[in-house]
Length: 148
Image 1 (spheres, rainbow, N blue to C red):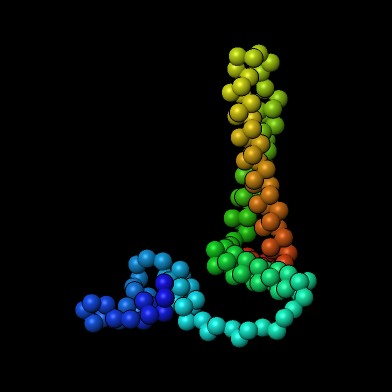
Image 2 (cartoon, rainbow, N blue to C red):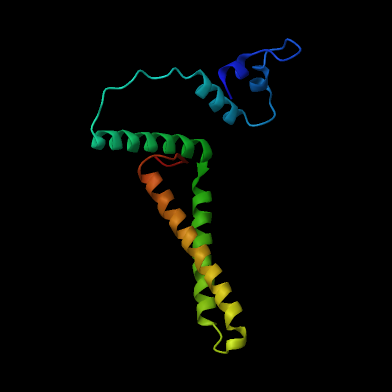
Protein backbone atom coordinates (compact mmCIF):
# COMPACT_ATOMS: atom_id res chain seq x y z
CA UNK A 1 0.00 0.00 0.00
CA UNK A 2 1.43 3.36 -1.00
CA UNK A 3 1.39 6.61 0.95
CA UNK A 4 -1.02 8.05 -1.62
CA UNK A 5 -3.42 5.17 -1.02
CA UNK A 6 -3.14 5.63 2.74
CA UNK A 7 -3.67 9.38 2.75
CA UNK A 8 -5.76 9.98 -0.37
CA UNK A 9 -9.49 10.64 -0.69
CA UNK A 10 -12.01 8.01 -1.63
CA UNK A 11 -14.69 8.54 -4.29
CA UNK A 12 -16.95 10.33 -1.76
CA UNK A 13 -14.32 12.85 -0.70
CA UNK A 14 -13.58 11.09 2.61
CA UNK A 15 -10.04 10.64 3.83
CA UNK A 16 -8.87 7.04 3.52
CA UNK A 17 -7.01 7.48 6.81
CA UNK A 18 -10.33 6.62 8.44
CA UNK A 19 -9.51 2.93 7.96
CA UNK A 20 -6.86 3.31 10.63
CA UNK A 21 -9.27 4.62 13.26
CA UNK A 22 -11.84 1.86 12.95
CA UNK A 23 -12.02 -0.51 15.88
CA UNK A 24 -12.54 -3.53 13.66
CA UNK A 25 -9.82 -5.28 11.72
CA UNK A 26 -6.18 -5.52 12.66
CA UNK A 27 -4.99 -2.14 13.94
CA UNK A 28 -1.41 -3.27 14.64
CA UNK A 29 -0.94 -4.43 11.07
CA UNK A 30 -2.49 -1.23 9.79
CA UNK A 31 -0.25 0.85 12.04
CA UNK A 32 2.80 -0.99 10.67
CA UNK A 33 1.62 -0.36 7.11
CA UNK A 34 1.23 3.34 7.89
CA UNK A 35 4.64 3.49 9.59
CA UNK A 36 6.25 1.78 6.59
CA UNK A 37 4.53 4.11 4.14
CA UNK A 38 5.52 7.20 6.12
CA UNK A 39 9.10 6.08 6.68
CA UNK A 40 11.63 8.49 5.29
CA UNK A 41 14.11 6.76 3.01
CA UNK A 42 17.57 6.56 4.54
CA UNK A 43 20.40 8.39 2.83
CA UNK A 44 22.74 6.24 0.81
CA UNK A 45 25.10 4.69 3.36
CA UNK A 46 28.86 4.69 3.10
CA UNK A 47 30.29 1.43 1.77
CA UNK A 48 30.97 -1.10 4.54
CA UNK A 49 32.80 -4.40 4.68
CA UNK A 50 30.87 -7.62 4.26
CA UNK A 51 31.47 -8.47 7.93
CA UNK A 52 30.13 -5.10 9.11
CA UNK A 53 27.09 -5.48 6.85
CA UNK A 54 26.36 -8.95 8.24
CA UNK A 55 26.62 -7.53 11.79
CA UNK A 56 24.13 -4.78 10.85
CA UNK A 57 21.74 -7.38 9.49
CA UNK A 58 22.10 -9.48 12.66
CA UNK A 59 21.29 -6.41 14.78
CA UNK A 60 18.26 -5.64 12.63
CA UNK A 61 17.07 -9.25 12.92
CA UNK A 62 17.45 -9.12 16.71
CA UNK A 63 15.59 -5.78 16.97
CA UNK A 64 12.76 -6.89 14.70
CA UNK A 65 12.47 -10.26 16.44
CA UNK A 66 12.32 -8.62 19.85
CA UNK A 67 9.64 -6.19 18.66
CA UNK A 68 7.54 -8.98 17.14
CA UNK A 69 7.95 -11.23 20.17
CA UNK A 70 6.99 -8.47 22.58
CA UNK A 71 3.92 -7.63 20.48
CA UNK A 72 2.77 -11.26 20.57
CA UNK A 73 3.80 -12.31 24.07
CA UNK A 74 2.29 -9.48 26.09
CA UNK A 75 1.34 -9.93 29.73
CA UNK A 76 2.73 -13.44 30.14
CA UNK A 77 2.02 -14.98 33.50
CA UNK A 78 4.11 -17.45 35.46
CA UNK A 79 1.25 -19.94 35.57
CA UNK A 80 1.04 -19.93 31.75
CA UNK A 81 4.72 -20.91 31.55
CA UNK A 82 4.23 -23.60 34.20
CA UNK A 83 1.25 -24.99 32.25
CA UNK A 84 3.44 -25.20 29.15
CA UNK A 85 6.10 -27.06 31.15
CA UNK A 86 3.45 -29.53 32.35
CA UNK A 87 2.24 -30.05 28.76
CA UNK A 88 5.80 -30.81 27.65
CA UNK A 89 6.30 -33.27 30.50
CA UNK A 90 2.97 -34.93 29.72
CA UNK A 91 3.88 -35.20 26.01
CA UNK A 92 7.22 -36.76 26.92
CA UNK A 93 5.45 -39.28 29.13
CA UNK A 94 2.97 -40.16 26.36
CA UNK A 95 5.82 -40.62 23.91
CA UNK A 96 7.75 -42.93 26.24
CA UNK A 97 4.60 -44.91 27.06
CA UNK A 98 3.86 -45.34 23.33
CA UNK A 99 7.45 -46.41 22.77
CA UNK A 100 7.23 -49.09 25.46
CA UNK A 101 3.92 -50.36 24.05
CA UNK A 102 5.15 -50.60 20.46
CA UNK A 103 3.68 -53.85 19.09
CA UNK A 104 5.92 -56.57 17.78
CA UNK A 105 3.46 -57.86 15.23
CA UNK A 106 3.75 -56.41 11.73
CA UNK A 107 0.00 -55.95 11.17
CA UNK A 108 -0.48 -53.09 13.62
CA UNK A 109 3.11 -51.89 13.75
CA UNK A 110 2.82 -49.28 10.97
CA UNK A 111 -0.02 -47.41 12.68
CA UNK A 112 1.76 -47.62 16.03
CA UNK A 113 4.94 -46.18 14.54
CA UNK A 114 3.00 -43.31 12.97
CA UNK A 115 1.42 -42.53 16.34
CA UNK A 116 4.81 -42.82 18.03
CA UNK A 117 6.30 -40.40 15.50
CA UNK A 118 3.55 -37.85 16.14
CA UNK A 119 4.01 -38.18 19.90
CA UNK A 120 7.77 -37.64 19.55
CA UNK A 121 7.31 -34.63 17.28
CA UNK A 122 4.88 -33.04 19.74
CA UNK A 123 7.27 -33.62 22.63
CA UNK A 124 10.25 -32.26 20.65
CA UNK A 125 8.36 -29.15 19.55
CA UNK A 126 7.28 -28.38 23.10
CA UNK A 127 10.84 -28.91 24.36
CA UNK A 128 12.27 -26.65 21.65
CA UNK A 129 9.66 -24.00 22.36
CA UNK A 130 10.47 -24.07 26.06
CA UNK A 131 14.17 -23.77 25.26
CA UNK A 132 13.51 -20.68 23.12
CA UNK A 133 11.21 -19.20 25.76
CA UNK A 134 13.80 -19.87 28.48
CA UNK A 135 16.43 -17.93 26.51
CA UNK A 136 14.00 -15.07 25.81
CA UNK A 137 13.33 -14.80 29.54
CA UNK A 138 17.06 -14.79 30.38
CA UNK A 139 17.68 -12.13 27.71
CA UNK A 140 14.78 -10.02 29.06
CA UNK A 141 13.12 -10.15 25.64
CA UNK A 142 9.76 -11.08 27.21
CA UNK A 143 8.16 -9.71 30.32
CA UNK A 144 6.51 -12.06 32.78
CA UNK A 145 4.28 -10.83 35.56
CA UNK A 146 6.12 -11.14 38.87
CA UNK A 147 9.57 -11.77 37.34
CA UNK A 148 12.33 -9.16 37.39
